Amino acid sequence: MPGSAASKTYGTVAADRRKEMSGLQFVQGLVDGTLPLNTIARTLGYDVTEAENGRVIVTATPNDTHLNPAGTVHGGFAATLLDSCMGLAIWSTLEKGVGQTTLEFKISLVRPITPETGLIRAEGIVLNRGRRVGTAEGRITDGKGRLLAHGTTTCLIFES
Image (tube, rainbow, N blue to C red; front, side):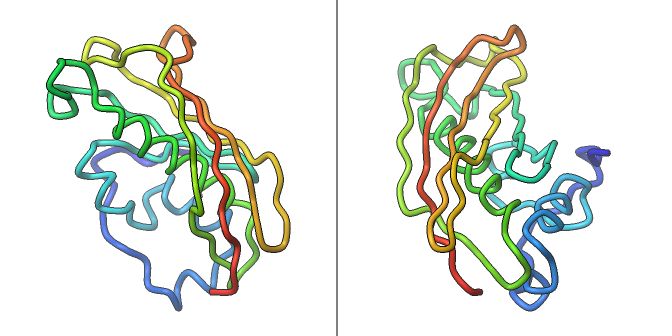
């Protein structure tokens, strides 16, 4: 069951503590609030709300702090949500003592996001998980299910 926003904390998880958990346990700890979200989540106002093996949901409500000079939400906001949901989807498949990092990602912004868009949902799904490399795709949709942005990532998997 997702933790409430009020129960969330922000920071980092010590490496020795991360090594004691599978990737899925780690990501589910972010969802239920037993582990802190990263501080960029606090800065940008997003939350990790669902996690299962190979699939993670990140949600956010864009506001006027996310705007570019043209008055729409900066593409970096969508990029961060996609990088987070796709990377965490890969992480959710890892064994204890294994970590991952993004090697590269690509996104396409297909509709403008504005504060009026309301709650958006970024879903990351693993496409392939090998011993050293994982790939995932992500989609950001609005409350009506319309596609706002999508992307793919390649992550390096390593002993942590």
